[in-house]
Image 1 (cartoon, helix red, strand yellow):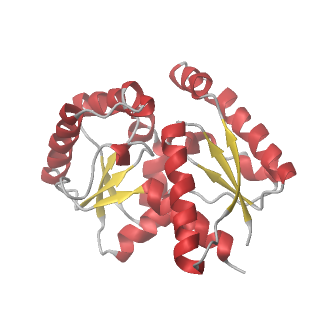
Image 2 (cartoon, rainbow, N blue to C red):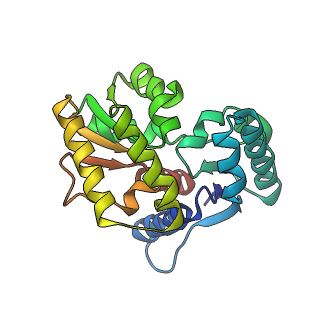
Length: 231
């Protein structure tokens, strides 16, 4: 089994989900007491968040590059970046670590296409919803039509992520806000929903969601585990 190098802590709330889901997948496939070989580099998210909101993306990307190189030295065979937003500055990871990066968009898009959808609603941080790095990969590589909330909706989604979910705060009022925004996406033509932030799965679930949803955290973790188990 290959050793996975996890770039985590962004936030640690979702990194714990990655660790659980990767190990659950390995146990499901291999049985018994089998578990994943993982090395985790966990960032102080306050430092990353400050760089994000200051627009210092190059500096944030450099931190990923340095950490991925450390994971290589520690024995990792592949890198898993446990966050959607920071894929914006993930281009240097493979070069710095000389390891493959398991990109979060690819397994998510493949699951959506396999399910027969071609139009997706995207929820995430404002950076993920507004910058092209995520939407362009979905559209150009996989031919998916991507719909994001209107400006007010993007503000609400972003604020709840950083002020509540990243701090482990789960409010029913915020859940209902998300469901209303998802209903708007459905009316705009979305056939399904991408939870494009690794914390959103802490708030919304299949039972209450107005659209079929694809949780990037769980999909990404499963793809990482499957990749680690490949010969």
